[in-house]
Image 1 (spheres, rainbow, N blue to C red):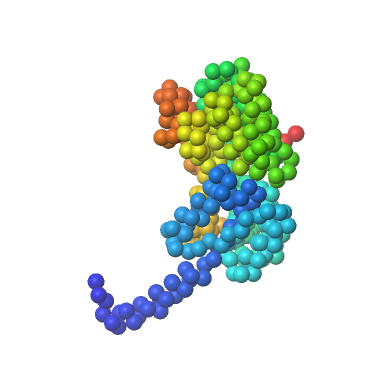
Image 2 (tube, rainbow, N blue to C red):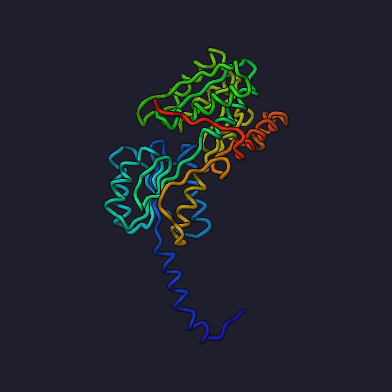
Length: 327
């Protein structure tokens, strides 16, 4: 409908103001070790920024960390360039977020998988033990040997949380199941070592494991490839990785980092953002196990029924999933 010229004249300043406001909004994201295209944790975050750009037309400034010193430097640079919200991916960025948030109290910060207790920081964590429990159930239900494996990335409480949930889920189905566990390393390099991941998976397969779950970033590509090559099953992590080796990936422990990143940036744009802690679990659709065309033939209707019943019981509180407790 054509508006009268005087109406258009009255509306023009408001329209220009709204356009300028959108153009001025400049969110930023800092990916951690493993890189933006790790097909796992960082890439899920990248998917969230891509959806934000698709929905709003607004670019998200990006930086991929290659050494620890770059974290705070990148945050400082983004803040000085006018970014209203800076999202940090990964627990290892906590100290950098704390330092930068104190330097720039009027800038909003969000961190995934860590807690920083400052009013201008939103700390987003997940109940990974819940999705890992379901994946452990799936592994035990699918296993023919009664032996399953777990390969973690960096040996930290967060990854022990994955391991604990996985082992408990497997034993919930089969109390006598054997669960082999290995961590890739104790430094950030553990997230990006497919060769080591392959070696650990082959070792577990040699001991009889026929399903192996990884929580190791890009290291997991080696785990999944080794399982496929040996005719065994793997379980993906963070992103839905079923598509990587269709018919070989039993399921994936999905962590909706993409949704968390999208929401925190969108809330900042819309003026509804709030600092403080957020914890997302099955009840919040923040974690889950994945079922799609790539693994449909591996998850039988009987298995799916058991997994969905357990999922419902966890959400209702009937089934309690234990947390990993640091020694």
